[in-house]
Length: 435
Image 1 (cartoon, rainbow, N blue to C red):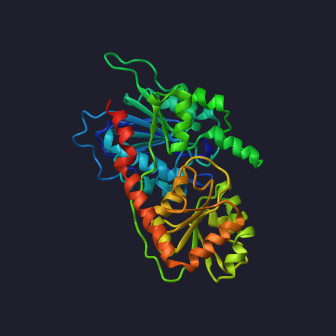
Image 2 (cartoon, rainbow, N blue to C red):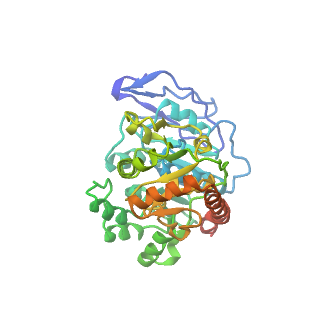
Image 3 (cartoon, rainbow, N blue to C red):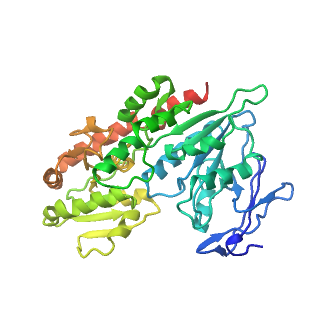
């Protein structure tokens, strides 16, 4: 029985090849629905543990011929089952790849709602999922996550590789097993950085933005030294990390995308921005609306906002700014757009919203920050605005020039096809996992 905030949530620690059936009831802790006892096949056993989570495979996905495959444990805070944030998309593609290479168990640290359960079950890759978050808690101290993991660690299958998703989760290295198993090498530890956090910290300080996970260059380098492999998402950051820890431990793994070219219309009327509510997106869009948009509004075009960022602008009085909101099917957002923007002016890493726009064959105008790692494509596959005035000028030129929009779109598709295919992006990681 679940009672208030002292609820005990079932943890089922299962063998790798079984499917768990877990209907969820209308029970709540605070504003968050939670599960009652898991309804699982009688042949399986399960144990209770206070305040941990549950464990299941997506339906109809049973491991077959994977008996000899290695196991990878992925530790993440990303809601990889959702659209709407670049780092979620990155984690999703990484998990899809890893699940084709090994038996993958995901340890998820974060809030989970009833709707999320259904979406995790629909995930494309055959993964196992353990939730160790506390309902209703978005920000939880590191010591909590360590304690939660230690509650279940003794009952987890041994894994050859532990994969930390984002460097900010590196504190979990303190509770992962470093010892050597009998007759086997010790586990290997990999981190997908997503961003170079020390560089992001410096940029945030410049704009007086509070960094959630601040790191100095020395601190970040010391953390990366603890790993057997470090994954960088773009060339600039890869070059920096190589200087710190050497090339042998660094893997350049760009974000893979499938080309989905869109129709280039005769008249460009719809400018689009797809983004999360992250402060860099909000501040960038506020600046764009204040300093760039007035010149564009005169041309009778519309600015469409998709994703969680739309919530921050839903009270706008401008009829030409349309806060469409969250879109379950990201590709449908792009179908209605003629030109995409990415107005962020601080941050780090690769801006996945930028390469997603390119993958959809739409002309993109962005800032130097929005094109980080893609600067060499300026003028061919995207356009970089280095001032507010230039941002407006470039957009006006594209509105008036269909041929240029077509050229940019085609070059963007060519780049994605040649450089962002799954095979091209994941080959370095695949080689590492197979050595």
